Image 1: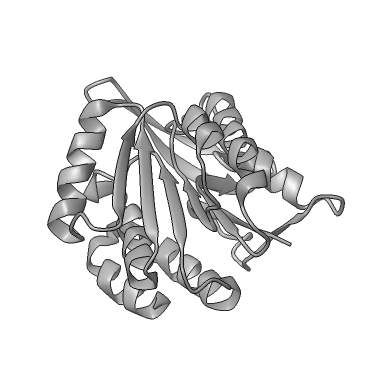
Image 2: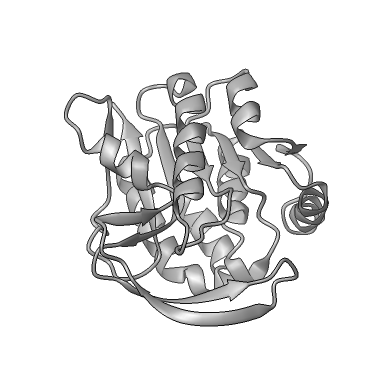
Length: 223
């Protein structure tokens, strides 16, 4: 199932192929569920950014499960829905418009695979994205059964030098610069990363990719 989803998604992965290899390996070694209930926050709708939701949606379909996507922007949701319909079809795929934290708080289910990818990261002002990632995780983690996996996108480790583009609201590049990451980790999953490495939590940091100098996904598993 995981290899089939990997093969299906690979042509769409673009610059995210290294992340795909990492996620594939982690899921091969750690995914315990035959039927998946998947949630993605931040709707996948731009092939230039990888559209990782296509991979998770395919996984859900292959398992006989369901995939939920949520985004606060109606235009993004409509674009995402069209993309998913063309690539995966409508069966087992649900799209939602709304605030992701509220959606997760109100979610009535037991998701066992969650991909947090909303609130675009700004490395020059990373705190809002970090905090939003934590609020999403806090809203859903207690609904996830033991063995569940949560994957958080867009993180950079200490020692990484990032060529960062500053964009306007239309997506045009206004300026670019190199940002050197001096904290242990910056990104959407930074607070979750620091929380999960504490022995008193019921979540473990998994994967062997935490010395990378690329954009990585933080991956945690519930005991």
